[in-house]
Image 1 (tube, rainbow, N blue to C red):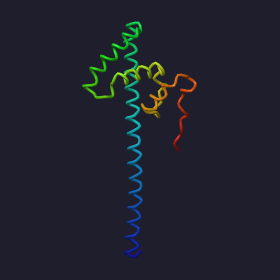
Image 2 (cartoon, one colour):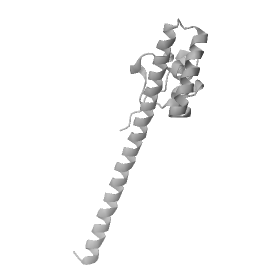
Image 3 (cartoon, rainbow, N blue to C red):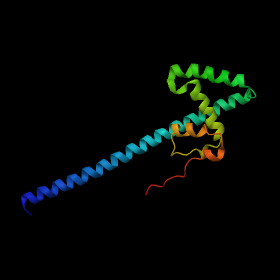
Image 4 (cartoon, one colour):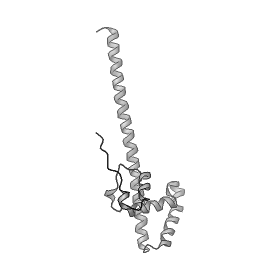
Length: 135
């Protein structure tokens, strides 16, 4: 093999290696984003569950529920930021009430998608789309 041919083979080999490395990095990044998204979904589900349980101790009086959420938001927001507003905590509670079984929460959906789903009143129309399989 001549010197130019050998250099060309090395360049093609490096190009292939680079393409493979890019695919590995992109897949890992995508998996990391999905993992973080699902952790947020689980966090909001668990917050909703805990709020709902606390309300049940107060026999689910509407005033008591508003009091809990308003005061919890006042404490959490300075510590953790705007993701714990009254509205967000109300949505967390609604999320838990809509999907009370943890195993029914899909890892393929993010919090924004679940927020849209819980706004749909008809349970038959609320079902998420079928899962797509990646081959």
